Image (cartoon, rainbow, N blue to C red; front, side, top):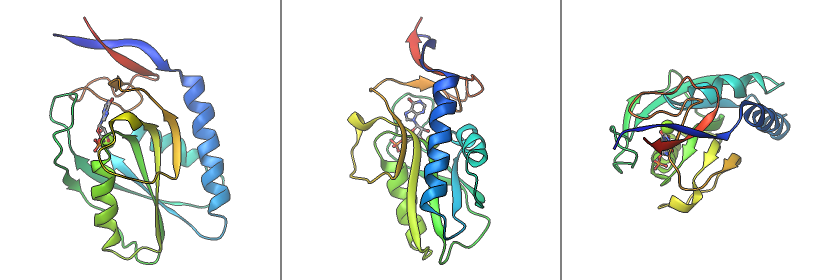
Length: 175
Ligand code: IMP
Ligand code: MG
């Protein structure tokens, strides 16, 4: 059945306010070092762009690419690295920046991968947490919003590559 963006789950104003709070929290917790924010492509690119502007203290930025979805709205379970960091993270405070944690497999995979490179610390910041669907145990350090088990699009979230540019977060609707 065809699907399209339905009602707004989280408005631009709500997103902006919460991203501001997350940015200030990250700044407070990292007053003693320059953390490296690692955005997880592609979904977190929009969130990352807003988040880094909400952190008033010095940070560094890098990206990793992963692919776990095909064209479906359910994860395949397998995580594939599509782009790697451009710098060493040895001895650094790393903050993984994700769009959404669903089963938890992507973050679990990324955390294990980064641990082998000997950072000082790894934290996770996610805009959305679909906690009902968790399959692996994870600790999340900064969470924007906990959402119900609905597929969302907009603000970086896509369905088969579409709708990332919508400024608000919508639930997907059967049409
Ligand atoms: P996990 O590995 O199951 O935690 O899946 C995480 C990834 O699945 C996210 O980074 C998203 O790319 C994708 N994903 C999960 N739920 C949604 C959704 O509702 N909309 C769009 N992408 C989603
Ligand atoms: Mg993602």
